[in-house]
Length: 97
Image (cartoon, rainbow, N blue to C red):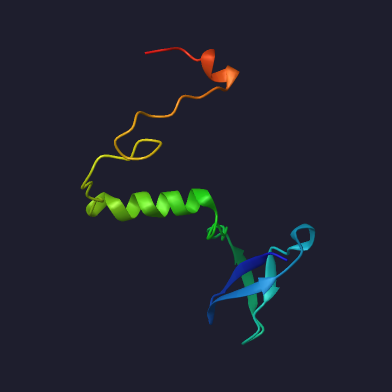
């Protein structure tokens, strides 16, 4: 159930749970009982463990201190050998450099 923020003139902001179809424009303040109006606030969406969130967090982290590359990336196969050749017929249709 969504959480909505309301603001009482005397007591300040407070949160209340309401169904999306039944959210009122105002509600009684739980502290003083005065009429409190609903406040439009930022949406609290969680993307804490998604791959996109991790990529965004990694990009933000490396903006100030980028990762240092100390060696060339490894080729497929063992070191010192030519890269392996694919036999997938879909790869033959790809444009060549």
